Length: 179
Image 1 (cartoon, rainbow, N blue to C red):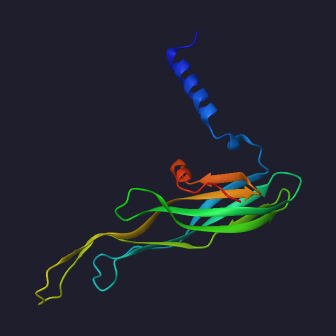
Image 2: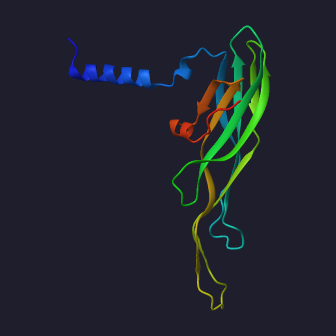
Image 3: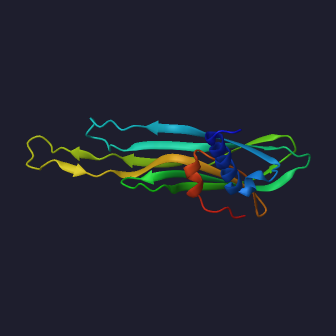
């Protein structure tokens, strides 16, 4: 006899299984892995009053495609999305995107890099007047964008054959795949 807890676990699994995207169960010939590579991350020195206090984050995505079939796959569209938030906003949005076309031979992994994307963010701060000035300190509101994640989709013809996301929330941000 199964316990009440076991019934709930089994029922939750079945509901999740039945509601899951059926495209994920299609047998795909393409295996996808993705790495986010920081190129340059510059934090501003808030004590340096002579420079702009903006933080800069440059990164690119590296997708590795492997064709697990015995036939070559041609004309794959690899769509890269850099996702983030604007200052003062809670909603995620696509900050930058890139698309590359790639052919993949059987059993051969192919590494494809996106372009470098840049996000610049200036934190809220105060500007202080020069000594002897009658000006008052001024509050400066936060501005710019910050990266929070990424998404990669691989399209063959009209079909989504592989996808990867830095977290599940990123899937809702990217547009529906189009060939």
